[in-house]
Image 1: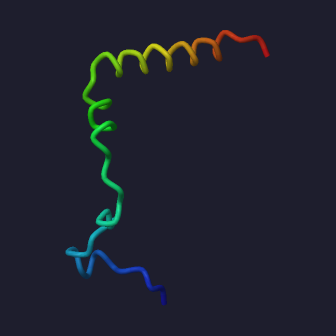
Image 2: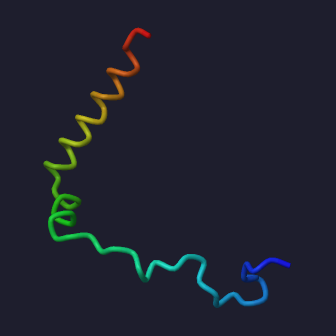
Length: 57
């Protein structure tokens, strides 16, 4: 017999407990909402992927 709770018998049990998860800082939230920051990360990420795709192995 396992100790895993059965969600079919008790659907009120939480699937994941996020109550102890750390909250994002103000700086993190500001960066997530910043369109220039998001665009910069988008360009950097795509440049890295393109360099990987076109590199000669």
